[in-house]
Length: 201
Image (tube, rainbow, N blue to C red; front, side, top):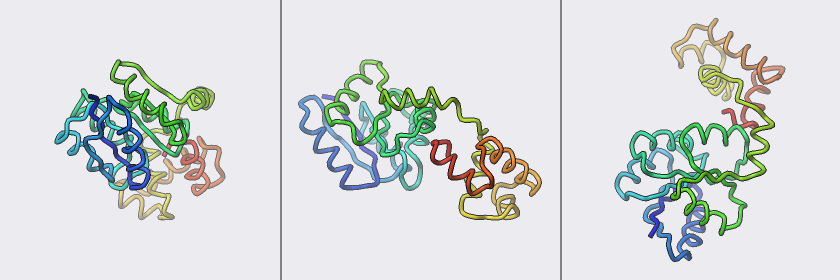
């Protein structure tokens, strides 16, 4: 029996996935969590074979949780199941240690198959997303540029961002300027929007 953990902040979606997977004779959902920062503790407690993670959750993203699992429970296979089929998300998910990346409108049978395939050591990626990720190219932003751009997303001014990230205002201005340039945006708000649409943030 394949033991599965589900992490999704939308209870209806999570319960629907649990019901669908429960119909499979060889799959058992052993735990469900609604927050990204609950994933590692639940995995350590319930010892699933596979963790199905949404990307956007309170506390921590599924991508961040996948990266933590790589250190805390390296034997657990990670499948990202998301509404947001963005090439940047796919690339970051694979870099964080996920073995599969599926969008939520994929057929239920495809999800069950993905669970089985990752246990056999295979990677499962939505084909259209894989093609888009290759066409898109790599995320041009550095980790620091992403951090500063994220901090600017709520409309904070440079002084506030500098204080929050323990940087000088000049450094914040430089990072924002570079991020705007790399995204081809006209201003920081547009840079945030473009980076989010591409899955870089």
